[in-house]
Length: 316
Image 1 (spheres, rainbow, N blue to C red):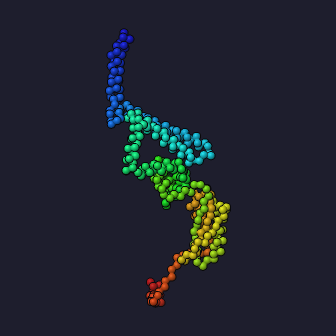
Image 2: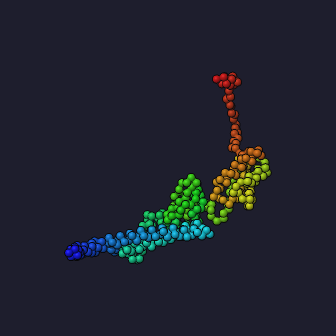
């Protein structure tokens, strides 16, 4: 009896439910709407969104795997590791977006090319700065004039390159403040990269002394300054240059070499401390502004207080 009731329930409800599911799938979810030359349905739109999400997640997982694999090879530069991971990320996301558009809107490669052509026209009129930043981002990744971890000076700001993204680059300053710099600025404007090429760098420390100072003594004293300072190389040897006769000074420049240009601010500070110490020991005076006032065809009277007024002021 129970078996007969079960079969009757299945015949009464399962078959109508199956027909209802088919009706919902074909008449609602899979019903295509015509938008221009593209056909869009709710099911294809959902599948396209799923493909885009999967592409983003896959790109992130792949980038982490690549960075983990390359990190084990210490002879590979960290900047190369970052560049490879970013390029793989952009490649996977781009392929995912194309597949998502094909699935969601039924577009072929020709239609997608027409779409990107229309977007390029819009970029040419109103988004040229955004396009310039994106193109500059790829230039930075391929040419690598600036790499992640490099010490750079941009205008008056200095810091370490934290990341190079599609449109902007993040630079972390010594104060742990993040500078968001458009990539086009790094390509177009002057940027000092303290970590590029030769690991050595020459630092110039200007110093002005009193005009009656002994030039030979100043030169010998400045050469002694570099001795005993951390991160200052003995080869190439330090050098002193006599730059010019100033208005009220003799202007010199001390040149030292270091293998840690990233620390150039602290090294200059240490050099200045030692200059002050040695100048004090040798009696060399730094310059101070002096002005001569000359009166031509006239006289100058100075009102000075009388002796009685000075005594009265002292009593008060």
